[in-house]
Image (cartoon, rainbow over all chains, first blue to last red):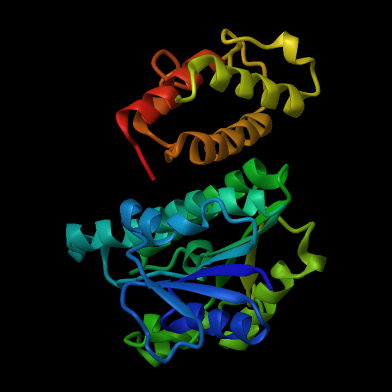
Length: 227
Length: 99
């Protein structure tokens, strides 16, 4: 079966997607800053916020004709007021979330074209739609992902490559582990479907976008749970 | 004997003819690839670069990185014309951007 590149594959939603894709028989190439010895798929060390690191990690795929999808799940967050957020943290959030997504799309796109088409799934957040206080930098980086993806979808449309964004509400992963429970619940209650989504809910949307039935869905931001 | 400039330019002209469906004779080293006088759509341009990348790898033994800083300048870009792209590829092969 064809290859799928998954960033942020060592844990969280990236790991969830990578494991399911591997179970379906795909060759999964997982990227993460640190390795994961127990991963049931190939892992490569990569800092997605560093263009050179991305280029090096994916160099052998560039002229491949057997790559089907890229799932950009790598992401970091720092829930904090902008006025108290260190510059280095601001830069790191934008590097990983926004530039990392762009770098990986640029690196994998030639292989998707050579493979005759494919899928790109990027990740955003409900924090963009709701304008959540304390998440301004995180929301800005993900709003960038949304804008980038809508435009990039048009660039790739002629090659049979769809580009979409999934913007979930809070899902229990390490990303929100330090956020107080009552704050999580308050966000969930602002969703159209006021129920906290699970990794499985997210995988169901990824699965749809990767399926043949997803071929006409592109340039969209899908709010898991509704926003 | 190494690959000559004309051979690279001829390859690019043939690829452009195939991509656009126009006769190969309608292209030359002066054919514009970017800017207002471009001879090819943005999709066709990407297809040409993919073909050029394969040619560079297989015939010249070099890596061709499309996304270099100079690529964005219409005045200096090696994507200006078929001739400038052919020159760039030849220059890369002579400077030893070996795989």
